[in-house]
Image (cartoon, rainbow over all chains, first blue to last red; front, side, top):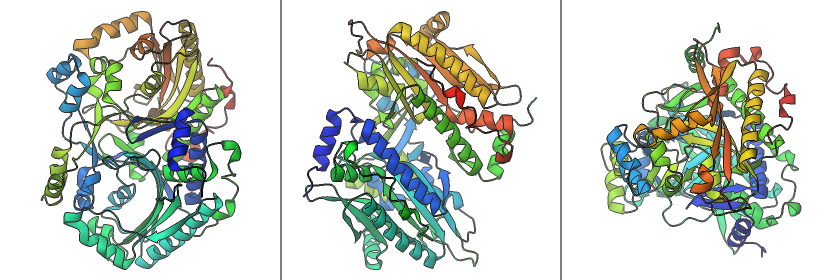
Length: 306
Length: 306
């Protein structure tokens, strides 16, 4: 049994002033926990680079139409978070500026959503490659993802916003399968090298039941999604990485083709950084002096993915 | 006269597939321009660390009430960008999922703003220190800032979202003045070491005229804001860094006190990373082979700020 749990380690970091949430579900940090975050972040970036993936810096938002093209609104409407702004007319702005409760007045006056806040980084890849013919594209990026999670929020474990490192492969179906298999092995080795325990399980996305429940069943039957779950104490595990084979779904949605003219297949490997930080803190405690060297086990960086 | 201008360098990067905008005002990049972005980002982070500033990772959003406390809605309501999400009731989600135009349906159905997307990083500092007594706090962070700019958008030069590196000092008024003066010298030396030309000018924030015009006048008369403007070709310059003395404004708004009981003074130095990248590209062209070594002029990292 682990001494620390997700709850006790988060409470200890809050007590030390290293972790806080200015908005429910949005975490901020400094000190040891931030140093750990940076080390895990660097480790994953190095790993993606060593595997030959091309680093992109994606935008913080996407057109709502891009998500529609990916059939997002059938699949995960419950998560959608979007950005809007106030109108440009001076009368509205003036009434907000002079309101006795300007925060509430502004909140109500925000216009319709002008873009979606990125729910998963790989949508940027498909949007960018739309209409193109590709042999094999290896893209990687890190960024903030937003998913509305209702009242299920827990610091570091489940945020309204969180940090993702993703590796995306677009190309032949067989290569996607190989990429995903190698990714799972790599994820397990990374966990082991950090002294973390967990397991790899088949999984399904939380598709919106009325419109997309059938897709979850299909995903399960075909074994298209695996999750690496890490211990966070108290007998609980959280999915800290997922390994996804989309088959030709996004290639078809976004008209991305292989040289022979068929829609390209795609797959992605996604790491939720805050969850890796949490699992590490639960395993090794909040004191940096007791931590194993994150940078030590470099052999994991051997090129293994594709 | 520079050979490249902001327009021609952006067009060339777009042609090479290194720069694109999935949403107007939201930029994405890869390749040489991303490598340059990372080098400038690292340079600024190293600089802040060398000056003894404590690195924070701030949240991507703020409570609207925090901005109200900072009198933001009187000052800059025109910029406000906020995040909202769909409601949790299944009927609404189902109607969006089944809509012939789900993007439009979702855009209209987004609830009232649940948080503000950070317009400037230093608000996080004041919110965090609220109610505390501080001698001298030196905080630094990098993050995405959102400011609605209407139709004045230009890639890398003026985005709806952009990347800021900020150094914030909270403490005695005389120390804030010294911090700001040293920051200006440092900004100029950084520009020179990158081979960039520009000038330092007194400036004012674009306060919302009806409610806060008086503050701009006061700011100008007192010389509380300077901007470092860099050449972007075609005889134009853009403000790539600002150096701000807030006097006791935020200390009073957020009840941050000095040991003797008076409100603390504060100041901040903010760098707009995309604008530094743009000025560098205009000065040296889009070909990495022709770039001077960003990492060479390390003497600028001598501790000079405070």
